[in-house]
Length: 627
Image (cartoon, rainbow, N blue to C red; front, side, top):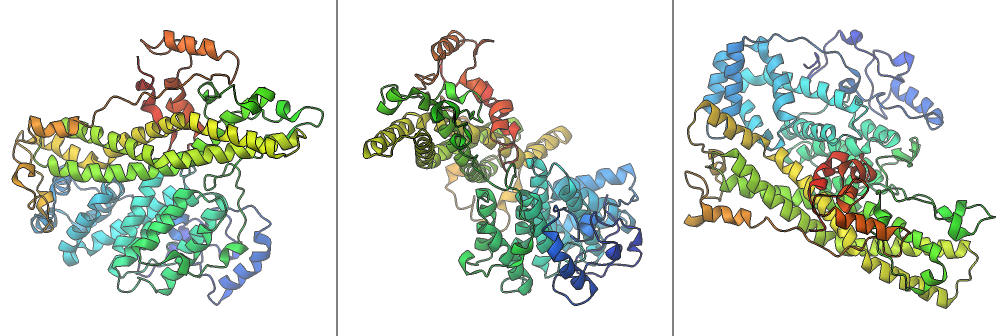
């Protein structure tokens, strides 16, 4: 339940002395409002005085971010009787653009103002935070409530601030995609209910600029950047807050500075690019903020906000050992990858120096980890949006939620896998070549071999041959990662329509009709030809064949089991062949084991947005190598 906080745009009432002071806040500021950066007064002077010592101390997240983050006090709300609870939930479940007036009247007739606290928390926790596609519907419903709904809007906003604070303080926000998704959805709603309605987000409640700075210092940009970006997206519909509003431009200046930080992850930069596009602002025309230079520089090692390459192993090799023997002891992050990397033993460089073969799996491993996150994220996003729009339209009059879910899964897995495949091929080839060339050059130099044209030619031969031979393996791993993430995401995206069909069948037993697709003067499906329009009774057998056609036999690339890469590869291949019929045996580590979520998922990094460890859990169920 939300605290007794106030909505954005209103003054904070007295009596806040009971709230906890944020951790790390100076004693003189305890219980006092936090002044905006650069404002006159004691707070500004204190901030200026503390600046020289800030860079010498470890950054702490949570100080001076506003009452939304510092206030963790919860309030007990009056709960309506059970019969009222059922009626309210029935109203919310069945509200649509076509019956807003009727449902608003029904709610007014049964909901007393003293129950608004409970209803606001219910809407935020159960609806708003998990159903971003229905935000416009809920906003329209609140507008229909008129003056009666002002107290409800305030209760909703209070609950939003409370739950935003909980998520930002969560120690798992950088590793759990589910928590970041909830925070992002709340940011989208917060911008829509404040900035889009020309209402400010008070600095006392949430300091968005300081939030970005502290996210940069403490490794939380992966969660903070999408949240603040979604808030600012609400400004595109605002008369007051759209650019060149000074407050918005100041935040864009911080985003611009963060965008240029070296090694920043691609998905964080992508959020900034999308925000600028939505606000119709060119990124290169935004003036950078100079505040980032005064902040604590983050440690990029094991930081979820940055992609850092490990230091070249040959530099740390003892001087009394050959570089080729002692330098490349680095293991691949993706387990057992070396057993499937193809190495041509006839290559001249490997024939003269076989120890350099161990460089190839490391280069392939680095290349896959560099490419997989942005490729999977973009491919899955496009595939899920396309699939949802088509499935919701085609199955508008389908009562069987299982049939709808199966069709969506078939379509999205095919689209996401194919998109990832065509997107990653050339970048992956280039990344493998670049990493392999760098590692080989370092190894040759560390071994004391002169950089002659002949040596360069042999290195380039290895780069071209190995990049081509292992391209299929990398593409297959990325394609399967995209497929598994798409299946999970489409289930989340269609959760509300599927649940609506299930409840309708259980409660009424009547055919289901989703009339929302006919609202908002939509061109479709009315403009579709007659054979393509949704009809009572759902899709026929011939129409379902369109979705069933997405089901395909998995690609069966030729993957050699570590030919020439290490000793014992032949025995591993033999063990894999023996277990092909019923899965890999106990002593065999087949490719499905390589793809298991517990290994590859963890290896790719549970902190990567959109690629948590469980995103690849189902890969073991797919036999990629064929019978």
